[in-house]
Image (cartoon, rainbow, N blue to C red; front, side, top):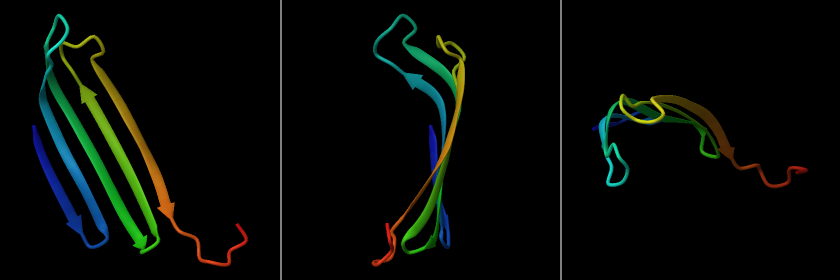
Length: 84
């Protein structure tokens, strides 16, 4: 596996590559992998941040050979006095 963290101003992220999964249980203990994981976040301002991720899992000898999962999340804080 290889992991790289990066940042450029308000953009921060992590990329990881997984080449093999070593398991302790199951008939086929170790899985050959060609998986990519990416997580990135951008801070628009101190109270507002947008995060996104993509997990592309690819296993050659696992019961489920590949999956693609992605998503996003916005987080922040409202100013005091807002009607919410």
